Length: 203
Image (tube, rainbow, N blue to C red; front, top):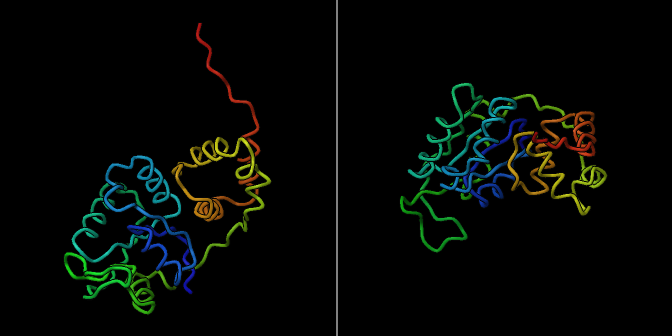
């Protein structure tokens, strides 16, 4: 399994599932064309592109390149973006009865060796792995980000402070927090959630 330091952006759930079998790292989904109107996710990706950097992997068909080109423009000139390309291989994914419109396999249909080679061609396979802060679900529980009556609100405030999307799953949130924050930074940020928020007064 290839350890990857930077978050990887793919099109959909099945792409993420397939990639997670060969990549040890944070994998985010665009939701296909939904990314075109998802301002929250775009803001999060812009933030990550400027801080950790992003790796972009889409299908090799027309739709995949449309999403790829859109993100390349939407993320801005200061984005640290690495493009990973899979080859155009004809076939049908196992879960589908018929091939796609262009008859090409997507990320979810790629063999492990093909995916790993695509990353290596992009110079990702030999990058140094950033040490994780080692955060666990127990840390989320202790910080009342899960399992408490006010967990949803605390997650919302924390993710908002980090310019991350609200609809992250618990696993994705944990992976990203471990990548973006040291343990000390995590403890400081979650402790700040206990501070009363200033309410604006009108005179």
